[in-house]
Length: 450
Image (cartoon, rainbow, N blue to C red; front, side):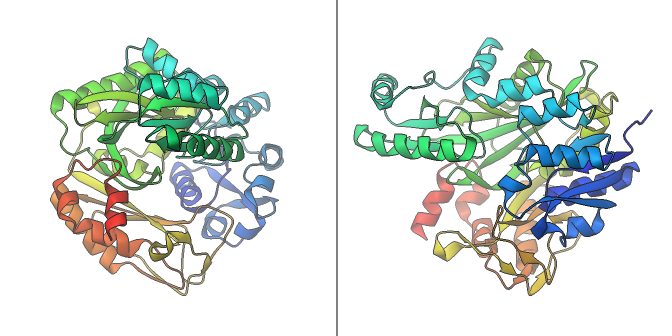
């Protein structure tokens, strides 16, 4: 029996619209928490109700836990969906929702806290029998960083212990580069997470980024929905994702998915989550990287090949319902690719380009999906992430999906601001990309050679 009748969305942009539309299909009243600059956004227009939670800057609105909770209580919302980013992986929000009698659409505070601390997460993975990348505990100062790096061996990665989203990560190829990397990573970690604590891992040069989507309910049921390849990144920010991951043997695919389930089961995880791994292509060994205790930006590629609506599944699980599927019910059909369209100038080192969208014409077609909050006349604000849209396609084969994506990007017309479409289009025609198996540095190397 459904108990959620009103749900507050504590987010903005395309993910807010995605959740609003899921609520409509479930017969749930959607209430959007919005900043001042987002009051005229498409999500605000489509939500059943809205509430302004503060000024444009996210620190005074979308990152203000008190404002978000006041909005939920004031609007009599029985549940709260945090989307991704902002407060989505803050254990405090999950805990305070629980105290206020509001259903948090996501995992428990304990799940979030244990996996949000990257050092604690490494220990959990190791206890689950999953390999972790050789590395350190937290490092106290630069002198200790030198000692640890020399013991592990260069190159190394310095990473924020409280990190996520590619923030607070730097590479040092030698001792001379270590101090700059240490200071830069610690500074960004402190600015992004309020915690400058770092740890060090061995850097795997020929690496791919493979992640596994899992969903789990409150009755001990847990399934995986397969893996995604998220290796095409720039400065640790994903740009292109696909599912299934190309060039994996059946055994390797099964081993990675089994490892993800083992980690999630070990903490009695509930709701949707993603376990990320680094695959060393030289040795074909994989290592636990981190777990994201939320819906992912790239979740649509999994939806496209499984037919499972992850957002509706999230809400149903939070509402106390069992999973709608068992592992044997999950099947995969074809190949899906997602491109993130950002308001950025590729030729100016991806500088963000806020401004008025004078023209917006998104591609349409069978097996073409565009998740976006944009429209002609929309003003792209300068206060948030520059994501304009996600284009997702599904083909019968990977090559067919690539060709479909190229066609979709050709038909996507955006006026008024620069976008990443021209660069993404060039990737779709690249011979090396079409072969597959590109490592996490391939995209940056392509940019460097452009």
